[in-house]
Amino acid sequence: MTTYRIEFGKVGDTSPVPPITLPFDEINEFCRAVEGHAIPHLRPVLTEMGRPELADCLFHMNGDRSMGQFLWLNLAEEKGAQFCPARLTAVANTAYCTGDRCTDCTPADECCEATCGCCPRVDEHDHCRLAPGAEDDSQYCDQHGEGSLNGRSPEAELRYQLLRDA
Image (cartoon, rainbow, N blue to C red; front, side, top):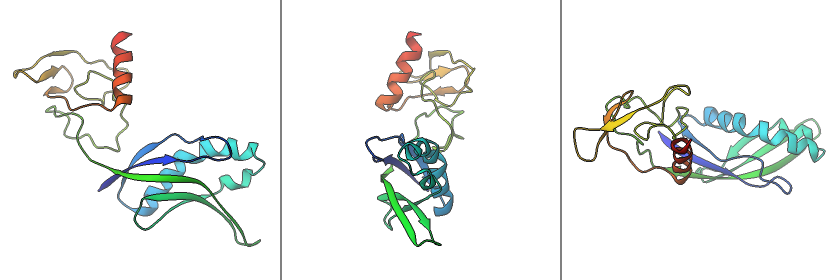
């Protein structure tokens, strides 16, 4: 399984769709997930542009999965449109956490990456408490066991710091 980060281009003068990272198992499932993420962001922009029908679209990507776009087709009137280009980048499937209870984490899981730092996948109303681990570079989380931390993305680090400072 490969995981892709999808970054979306402009529609009109705006870039309404935030990036997303998704696992790729099967092409139709992947494209539906991209559509499910993007269309709610595209619909208001397309409506404002006077083209609400374009929101009834599909996501299409090239053969090497490096770029994609949205397609709108009206077969009866022999019309079509391509819009909102997207760049797809394969990302490494590096586990964020090496804790002994984190082996079930997958990139597709919802993940705020802003909890104790030992494991980002905690129920939103739970809290983690860290303690020094058995080894010098490890930490113990009361929910996730003992483990060492891998680096966080800059975005995740910012969210983590916001929670720590709260």
